[in-house]
Amino acid sequence: MSSLDRLYRDVENLKQQYKGLAGGPQLALSSIENGSIDSKDADGNLKMTIGEQDDGGNTINVLAGPTPPTPTGFTVDTDYGKFILHWSGDFDGEALAPSDWSRAEVHASQDPFFVPSRATARGSIVSAAGGEVTIGVLKGPWTVKMLAWSQAGKMSAPSAPVDVEVPSYGDIVLEEIDAATTLIKNAGEMLLEGQQTLA
Image 1 (cartoon, rainbow, N blue to C red):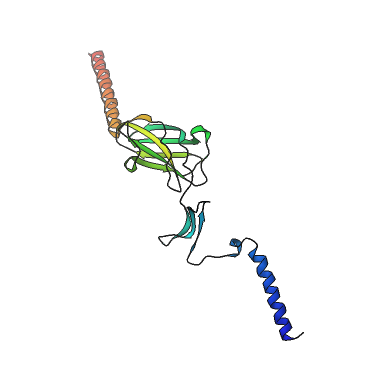
Image 2 (image 1 turned 30 degrees about the vertical axis):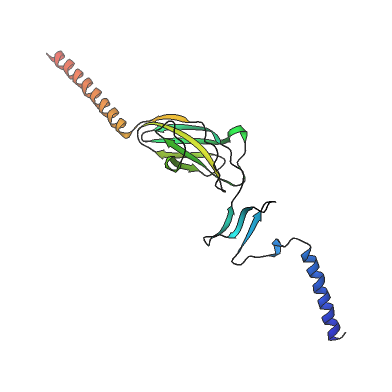
């Protein structure tokens, strides 16, 4: 076989291999250098970017998705200078967390009619299975609500409010003073009874 025949055969083999690649999925055989892959919907709207982002970082950035359901099934315990929120991981209407779940956010204010905002955000639970968070606050009445965020930055409707009364550390001191006063009073009465007995 001449060199020309071998060259012709190699070219034909390469053509066949190219045809096989062109008809199948390409992403598994691809790599990205200093770039990204964009995922769009049927109308051409960008929904997700995989790879390099605008700030130079590399990650999966979800830009669109469903609004997450509202968290429900949480309880709030109080202690001196704080409250502890326990969330069961349940959602309104027995819904499931979306695939682009981000976090459940705890909001609290001493205004019982507050609207959740950055100013009222107190902590987060990042697991869609639930959890608890402890939040230090001032003494007094507090209204607590929860809402959920998706990775696309969509916020759920806030939950129904839960009202609690948080005691302060000053209440501990007052309780100890009252207890000490009671002990002193009892000791004084015992001493008086002892003196009367001796007399």
